[in-house]
Image (tube, rainbow, N blue to C red; front, side):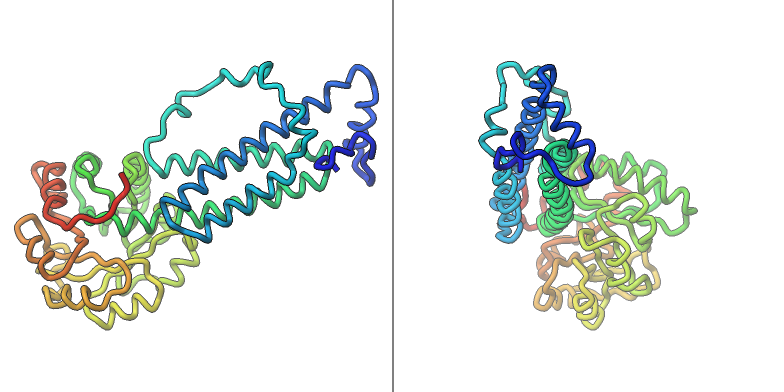
Length: 374
């Protein structure tokens, strides 16, 4: 096996003509450098995969304080290390490596934690694919081990990004629900520039093609600002644009069905108007709930206000993140905070503001500070 450096004296067995040809070609003088080149590729990609995993592991450990994910990263690194033999290391030739001086502008900066994590997951997965393919030339057990690790990393990525989304959900106090306006993108971007990190796309009267177009553009805009993007009601559109999640009303799909469609790594929220609906949403496994409407609102004219009493109830009984919503603006947000809300959702207070960026900043200034990422 390659890991024990005995490939050169133990030719491959079994119906693998490519490996047999590769072995015999090494016995010929013109090809004596081929094995070293393959070993250099294995060495570089073992290093690359281990480095990427260590970067991810540090965030699991210090950013998420998640012992389980940290242990998973460490175990993956240790498995890779077991294949990093002295023979592979001996082939390293950094001085003559033509790739050490190559770089790309996208590698020079990371705009946020999400992009940093995503870049390193891609780095690890690409390295494992290289190890799998070149491993087929010298040791099929190495190739299979790298394939197995690659799928483990895919699962780890889903789990970690789910944790990261839910952490952002808990850390930011202001949530914007959009309404139809002519300058939709400009308003949302101005709010993002003002510090907004949570956006829900809500459009009741557009055709599906327009909804898909708008949702797709808003998702990209939100991710450019490291903000979460959710879609109101429409699980299909959330899936189509790869949104961070969906917000469901009482008459929409059940939470479990939305989870089955979108996957466990996405956020699912649910509107509630009374304690019974709150308890049911929590039992169904919602990641957060809306609590309201606190005040009368033209967004939902048919809904009788739940009032501040329901906000007080949520403060005492909600066991998941919750957002007070309904008629909240800069003039009454302090009443809602005094009733116990730490996180609020707004519509008109930003969407119809003369200066959406300033409106966002004024609202944020009146909300209690939450622990958040720098």
